[in-house]
Length: 264
Length: 274
Ligand SMILES: Nc1ncnc2c1ncn2[C@@H]1O[C@H](COP(=O)(O)OP(=O)(O)O)[C@@H](O)[C@H]1O
Ligand SMILES: [Mg+2]
Image (cartoon, rainbow over all chains, first blue to last red):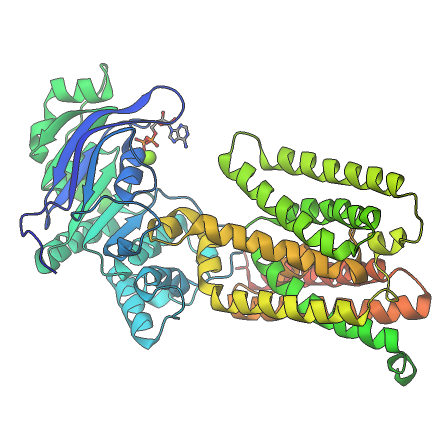
């Protein structure tokens, strides 16, 4: 396959989108290069999940251009094996008869295709990704019996299990404790450096995003900032994104008080 | 026992019962997980319209009920996906409309040679050799599709959004499952009856989920529940001279409640003592 080496992982140009009423996304443009971690911050209802669903091809924008790994995304589509997706946390039906390992194996299905069943290689890869998120010892546990944070880790493992080139994460740190988050973001950085993985990560938590991304965008229906992570930490941009009356608490990259909280 | 099996109609009823309970129980597993239980109720009752239309036109009620039920099942699927009206309201409307049409057709047909009670509640006398062949063919097709698409159906039921995002044709798979559900309903009408067949789309799957949280054993428990209820119910129906659908569903419900108690018990035994 010939491929432009500078092809961005995600490129959005002038996206407009709405469900029934008002525009949820207005003239949104952004570019996420390969091999980088891109953060999108914004308040609840700011259109972050909608933006991810557009990148996934689960919905098409009313106006604008979308390119994901060089193609116009459209689900269902076979080339989705290159994209891993972690949806916003929703707790599973408690009695659903699947184990943590079964769930991670679902992340391999797009690579397998419809008629093939997961084999030994797929199981090994699934177990390996469970190990990456610290859940290897719970592989055989029923998924529904895991805590919210544990389910979130297993879902992250599922998103990684298909060996994606692009990873889309919707509020990935929900329910995960501080120690778990720290090692999760280290894992992302490591995958980015080793495999050239591109990550688009969405969060309403500015502290988390600015500390762990290469570039960010501030989104509240429209893009208020697009650039280096610390650039968004000025009061004017934050107020435009989150509205006035915001209490700004900025986490440093190295955050001594967080360490204290974690230990305490 | 030998006496029963010497009876031609009883052998046919048992053979049909074994096939259709296996098929219904397999589908039941996915119906319960995908939360299609109420669709099963709607589709089975809608089949009444088809049966009655067949009687009015003087053709095989089953032959008319098949497109009728398949059409209604898929229509419910389309309307519920568009999401403007709640799925419960949609089903409520379809199912009462189809029942109402059925009553009108029966009224118009003016013929009472249709065994209405049999269609509604099931009859062991009703299964012909032709029915048995149809049951076997449809059953094989449905079980084959389930086997081939097992992991896809499971993924869609577990997480529709991620299944779509990873490239599965979720809409197509849903309509396929609804079509299989409709076919299973129609092939079960003679033995179990329109009013009661939806119970066998729910009870086996629900029973299995009381007993295990692994899909392999769950499918097995579901099928065992369906088989025990159907075969047990047919014997009971013969000896007590009761409608077969009623005895089958009563046995199935009994198994469900035992499983429910057992499941509670087991969970309590496993829970950490405080
Ligand atoms: N399926 C939907 N139908 C109608 N409106 C929706 C739907 N999903 C989201 N919205 C609306 O779009 C806006 C943005 O939602 P979302 O993208 O989920 O925001 P975020 O993820 O940033 O919290 C919200 O006002 C929400 O009410
Ligand atoms: Mg969201």
